[in-house]
Length: 114
Length: 114
Image (tube, rainbow over all chains, first blue to last red; front, top):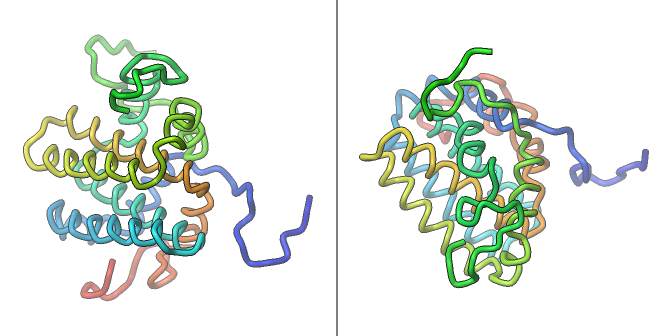
């Protein structure tokens, strides 16, 4: 293995499943999250969403990475409160290819979403 | 295996890692995503963000699940364009416990974020 002498994360971090991540956030925060509820939690997500936009415009890679993590965490938090399984959500919507054209490599008309 | 006679997703779908999901979205959409760029793609993410809010307020569970999937997909899309590894992002920010208090079960003051 190559050494990684600086403090940047390893380029190939250990995998984490979406289910493990959702459970990690549940373990860390669920009691507080439920007390706050969806509306109050969505405000935190919205704040992180804005911070991600700012980081993408002018932040360092470390800041961008941090804001992606925060948006994902608040998204998982709201999914926990709403009792939505993110893995099932992804499998259902994207597991059979692009929802628009059904292909693994999207072939939708460029003018169409997505 | 139990049969699942209706069209709802199985309650325990096969795991998908965050890295697999990010790669799936890259395979499906990367060529279009790069052409559109971060700014234009963020507009799509913002639209889905609003649709998630609407679904959480008054949508069915199926609609909520779909909107969570869409926000995750557009988030992965932007991460792909910005060359951010979502797994590394999560591991770095949340892999050692709550970023605020360092505990696996958050013990931060309730008034504090998060």
